Image (tube, rainbow over all chains, first blue to last red; front, side, top):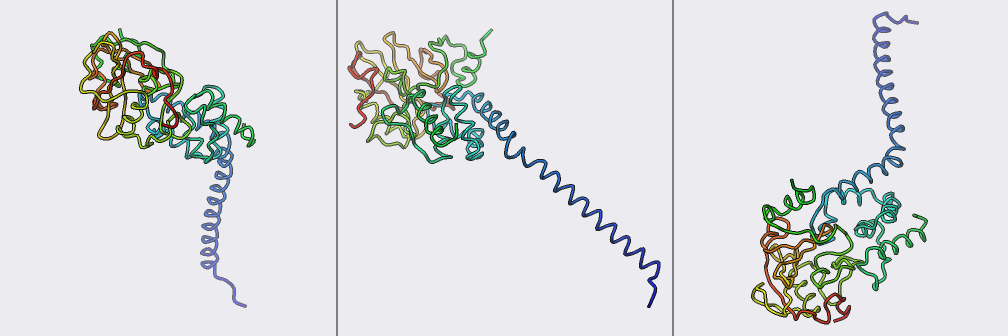
Length: 138
Length: 158
């Protein structure tokens, strides 16, 4: 049986240390990813929503068209938050009715506002809040 | 020194700077210029789903569609915004084919405008609101003052 040369052992040791360091980096990345996950799906959605809602309200647009109001980048980002934003929007409607109906319709596809109250902001908000309760979202 | 609200309005509408416009209501998202042009402050009139918009009126946001809407409220096209006794006029602002705003003439000859979700203001000249936000006045319409449809919803089905 041949004995391994000290150069060969040193070379393998170097390679193993290099792979170990790479694995350590990978484990570190995965741990950070796992740590970030609850923030993406929980607390930070609420914070993101409230920041975006404030940005949209602060824009102080004089537009008379809901479509134009909804095209604001912050409003579009709220729609981009998807179904997770629905309970937050409903809570916002409960707090202070505003033009969140475009976002709700875009995310959910629902249209719960009766024709006879169309355009009446308080009644529209009430219709959406009832819809959300019926779907376990409020 | 101007209040923050006046500064905001002058930033949005540079034509208001140095002119004596008057704020006549607090800001509210509950109604818009379209409803206010008909004398109503109860609903937001808009072609988007869920909002008040009569059946049969196109939902494309064009000046043509809004002209049809105001015809349902008893208005007819007229050539100018000059004050006429016992006549109520509206001035429609647009940018190309797109409707942007409508102002209603008061009996004193001034105009009242609900500025989106912001306040109502009374302004003497229409071009004080012309610019990037609202474009320019593209047509005038008129009806008798104290018209029976003033302040009411036009029929849902024409």
